[in-house]
Image (cartoon, rainbow, N blue to C red; front, side, top):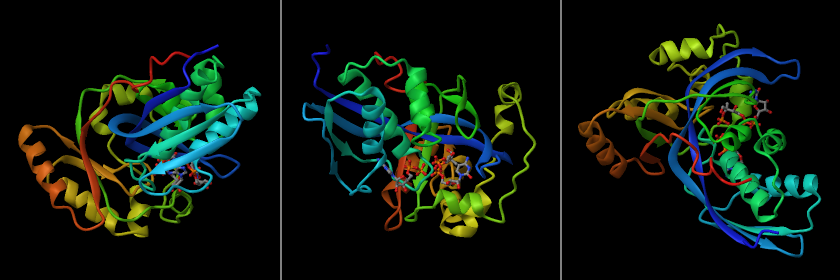
Length: 287
Ligand SMILES: C[C@@](CO)(OP(=O)(O)O)[C@H](O)COP(=O)(O)OP(=O)(O)OC[C@H]1O[C@@H](n2ccc(N)nc2=O)[C@H](O)[C@@H]1O
Ligand SMILES: Nc1ncnc2c1ncn2[C@@H]1O[C@H](COP(=O)(O)OP(=O)(O)O)[C@@H](O)[C@H]1O
């Protein structure tokens, strides 16, 4: 039995370096192609086991939905494993939500990885990833721990090595509802499928997000954010279903401009100047 009863763990955000909608499944879910890239903007989770089987969450910072993805992840693992143990989860939330940064999905993955260890379950990652898909399409990526070429609705992952990159991330003060963007009549659903080899041969040819146009129609602040990030960095574009955007910071001069911009953001906006991660901080975490 594991002697550890508490863990402090990071949950990093992701960017979609590009996102193509290539079709639709019979159940209405859209088929995607994307490269998911981990970034060093992280939530912090404190997990402490309980012997009474209860699952409880405490928020440091903004209040999350009552039955948030962390509690749902803990409950799913508790039920599937049959453990009698519980957990107190304290979330220090830094990554904004409704942003396309996958923060909630990453929190859920970190809870699964942490509880797998604290509860002494020793599930292999592949089994955790299958449970994770039931919580959300992006959760298996965060369990996988590597930057990835992603297909299907998020379950088909192939690890990719990405070149080191600094990023400026900006989020306007609106949350974009993913369902509304996928339902938009403005969304093209027939981008020609590419292959991982196409991407590896010409990564610069993959910088378009098919969801950006419907998201901009939902809120013009998405376009404002793209324009603002483009003042400091290159190839400014939206991540996921928005509303956050990101741009490539390729020089110290751009980084200085980006820092200045972060200090003078309009009311309600938030942002981050950071780096891509080669691997998830928990990629070597014992299972
Ligand atoms: C688009 C992505 C790319 O990373 O972005 P973000 O959520 O990070 O913005 C994800 O695949 C989002 O997946 P996920 O976050 O699980 O989506 P959900 O909130 O469950 O989806 C809400 C709704 O959007 C629609 N939906 C979602 C994903 C998908 N591949 N096709 C869809 O049609 C469905 O109607 C679904 O009920
Ligand atoms: N722990 C959590 N952190 C953030 N959002 C959460 C969490 N649990 C549930 N949610 C809900 O999930 C939605 C999507 O959040 P998130 O995974 O951050 O995705 P997105 O990439 O779409 O911003 C949010 O709008 C929020 O209502």
